[in-house]
Length: 167
Image (cartoon, rainbow, N blue to C red; front, side, top):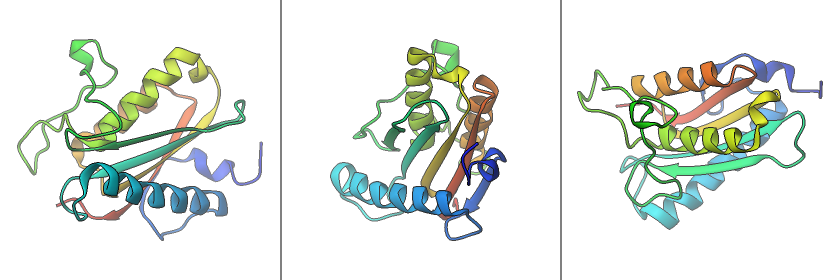
C-alpha cells in the first residue's frame, strides 16, 4: 500500500485546513483550485450563491485518477441525476434545516456521475479513495448520499473537506 494511503481509509468530514496527510492536502488544494475555476465558468457568482463540489477518485489499480466537478445550479459540468427510485444510484433526502428535497446538490451530482463511471468500468471492484471537496459543509441529505455511495462501493473510502459551514 502506498505511503499516505492508509490514513485515507477512515471516512472523515473535515474543514479544509484541518488535520490532513500530505497526499490529502495536495489533493484538496488541487480540488479547491478546480472548484474556483468551475465557479467562474459555470456560476459567475460569489461563494454562498450555489455550491461547487469537485472530486478525485484514486484507485490502487488505475494510473490516472477520475475527476468530476458539479454545481448545485442548473448550469453544471455534471447533469442532474435520476434518483434511486427512478433508476439512478442514490436517493436524496429532504434536508431538515431547509425543508426541501436536496436533489440538485453538487455533492449528489458529483457522486452520481462518479458512480456511473465506476459501474461502467467495473472499477468498483478495486480499492480506492474519493477526495471530495465541497465549498459548503455537506447537508444531511448529502451526508446520506455519501453513506449510500460507501454502501454501494464498500472498497472505496471517501474523505470530505469543505470551507464553509452549511447554513
